[in-house]
Length: 188
Image (cartoon, rainbow, N blue to C red):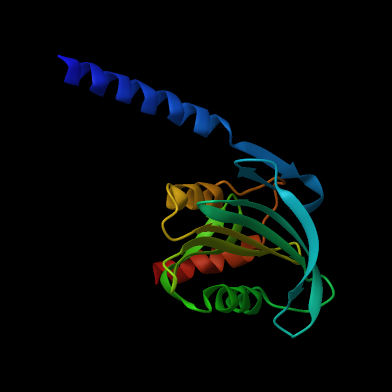
């Protein structure tokens, strides 16, 4: 009988702790940059530089939270001064993100009507990155949830963060004609 009581108390404790942890996440929206994302606490916001595919350093905003089990980072780089193509921008970002790691998953990704790529990258140090990159409104949007090695629940938090990205306006980075040809290409 005492074992059942211990199991019940333990189950009640675990189930009561889970909702509290889930409730600590909050969505933050940034209308100037047309996106929203959920963080487990208020993010640190910094202005920095990002090296574009053409070698230039461009202004970027980084929104981040660092916890014992991982790092959550959203980078928005302003690429409006160049004539860069989406494929080149995204390929460059993927190459930079995967340095020192191994890409396990690299698939097409879409949030509403904004298209990009989603990746899963294993680090040589045992870390795991859940990443998505988009080129939209002449900006690179790069979201990274990094689970540190041995970090409890780090992978779940990294994936939850990466999957929380939304674009807050109702436009697309594809033209209607482009989507028609893309669909036709998949049919033939």
